[in-house]
Length: 392
Image 1: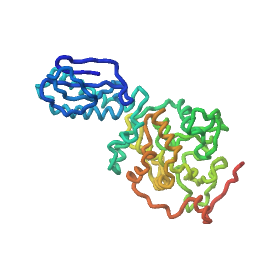
Image 2: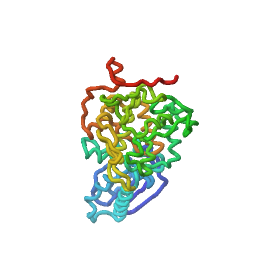
Image 3: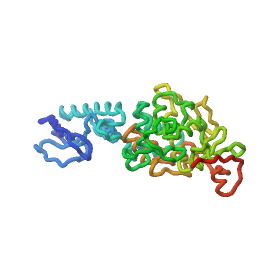
Image 4: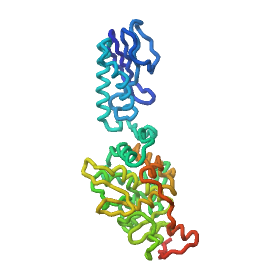
């Protein structure tokens, strides 16, 4: 505990765990009438009644200054004592504590939102999105960008290890699982076949050719999934969407190795129904996280109904918004988001936590008048397609 008064300025014992957070506590005393509200943190036994209690508060140690709650605490603390900083009745040690708190505020603001103890700001979802409430449009997009864009980047070689955990077949014990689930086939394959021609590869849902030119965009695991090596080559850099109603070249499934409810034409690619929302939210994350000028020279990524590689525009926006509505986040998707936060990048995909953010940023999209081939086939409707026979 750090005590501060005119007779006994400071004591610095070993920081204790308070509410699960390593911290110290500060008490300020003064000879005169209290100048500050009595925000009691601990019960006090005053050693000398001539000293009046001014304030008591928790001060996390320096390694915790990246924690978002710590930042809020320090800001509130400075706001609390700032109106009295010209009051010359303060004792000298109280002035020292005040200056110390100001320094804490400066350091905390400059410190990234993570801490060395393994506890990260993204682990408290409610606090993580503080300030995003009641926003919409570009203001919400900008606020979310501020929250998620500063994050840890993995070396590209470590992305393999991350995907083996994030896409493990056993979502409850991913470390013990020997397989991963491929995003387009939904089949399990051995982790040991990573990078093998007959195994699985790393799929950038937002393709490289659509503006991924920096290390951070290329290694963002929110955008990378395990995929069958052959399906990865077949999809190429096609944007997402069901086959165009006017096409005569719709393939279902998209390839032999893909799931039965996939489809593709010359420009579009539709993944399995049960992961369409997952992919939509991953692309929305990319458009927000990297949708503004980047300090490392990266280009602005955008979602559009008229995607073009030259403009770094991925799509189809209307389709992705619909997929987000029709396929809400599953338990597996939420666990993946949680592990990206805790184990790897220390940020979150806001559209997994708040799918409603999509319509608040890009607007409501009415359901398509014509469903995908998968839906039309289900209800006996016709469409010009060619079916690929899958190997058992």
